[in-house]
Length: 297
Image 1: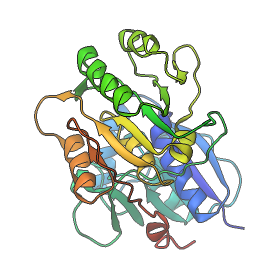
Image 2: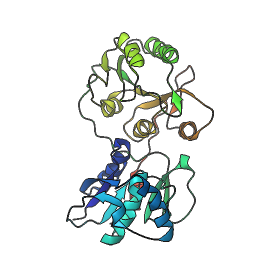
Image 3: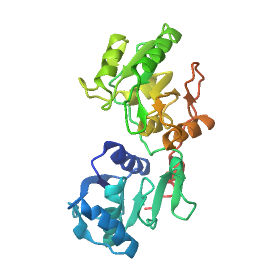
């Protein structure tokens, strides 16, 4: 039976993309952590790659003594190791994001459209991050419901308490009679958590106090799911599963950037609606099976 080796840099958002590939292919997988032995060796890996030098001595990875048909991963810490190990095993190398800084000579590169990938053999352009959703039964709607997913600040976006309060006030008024379910995330500030808790919605998860993930259940059960615009991974999940309408709640950012272009592109294609004071239902979904058909083991 085929088997996949996933190299992880320890970031859940990266790891989940590789797991999603294995799930769509219906193939078992193993996950191992990989890291450079010293930070400066990452810079050397770019140089070695340009020269075509494959060296296992640059990184640490405890590879099981098992036959694999494919090595995959996402994140800059994984790309050199994927190339080196796949070559040593004589198997396919697949990366789940555009491996910037390295030569694009992997067998397959899944590259998100907002990274503006080059048009060349082996690069498969995809509209969002790979995701595979499995509801967990954490949340069970008791009547017609909406879900709200709150992220937090990052390098691009900042979350305003006043802006969010206006958005939540609107949703509470607009969806009178609905069950309202809300969850925060690991990046949500304490100030925003206090704001959310003050609404006493029908279902509430404050992640810092209760680190669970009800988002798959929101997507499975809610008529509409609202997501703050800071997380490409959460938005990717929402436009690839279930029948819920998807609405993105805007955050403050410094001008145009690849993340706002990401949301704008999905809005133009009808996968979601960018909230501007009114609600429009958009629930077109992405079928990742179309892309995974190109991965032959």
